[in-house]
Image (tube, rainbow, N blue to C red; front, side, top):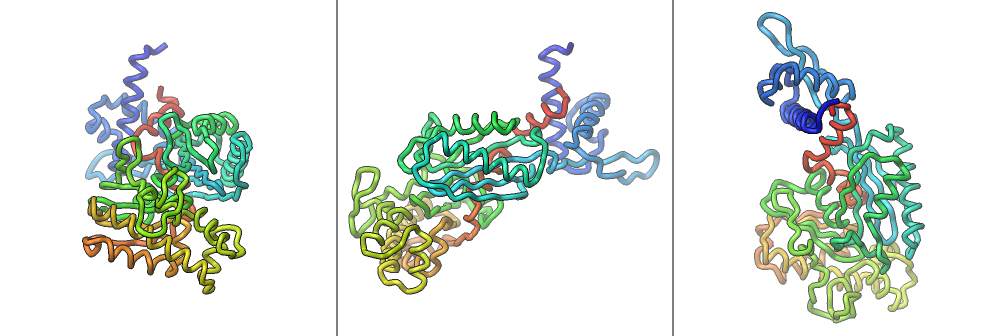
Length: 392
């Protein structure tokens, strides 16, 4: 039986081979031997097992001036999948991506508010199971599981869902056991996961700093530098919804008065419109009514947009990003939000002309998509591929 040290070395060699092929598709076994500084017999043995597991595939003979032509190798991004799940106050969303980050499938389920953790976990299992069944990959075909939830997420992996603590570690364990997943979970806030999706697949560009602002139950932002998240102390970077904005000082659920969230969070907007006598039930109703010209809803969105503009202006003035991406449910309000928000930005921000402002309509699944991409952002998932290939 091989010693643990031998298995560890072989594991590292297999990962290095996978990394080399991903970076330079079409490499032959002989080229891998040189690049990875490994014996040809070692490379051949590992490559045979990786191709046998369909992780690497042969791309055909390489050009040659004489003799037997070498065969090139390429990474197969559909050999396994990465799963993303986003949980918010009113919905569960799932996404499935291949190992190149290409989106394969999505699914959404509206949920009742104030579900207990057990009921939520059962519903999450059902929805994820339906998504996976739609593509029918084998249970061993997953090397990533990302879970997004309302932030900030505590060091003990607790999120707050409608005022109820949600234990993300327990939820992930439940998903893994019930669905027989072979994954190591990754956790982050909905906003951070949306930022990953926007900067990897959506509107994000290779700017020095990008700020992604998510307009949802709370107004939160994620700060990206060269497409990497800047989390700040305790992961609270971008928590602009708790900036105290000029204007009417309503009580916030944080215990203070005047926070942006108190007038611009979607739940707050719905509550304000109801208090004004508008017959609505959810934020979709507010947006539809405002677009139809309902003056109370339009005024409420105007106040919200002005507060949001002030918060974004504070962030822009401090860190001078190359780009600000606005995403989230309230983007669907169009001009009812955009016009007053941009007016506030111009009024409070001195350097907006140097910043590209983008509205993203990719928000419908961006949080779940980002959650499916998060496990793929470093090479650790390659270790899972190596383990299922039998190279160790």
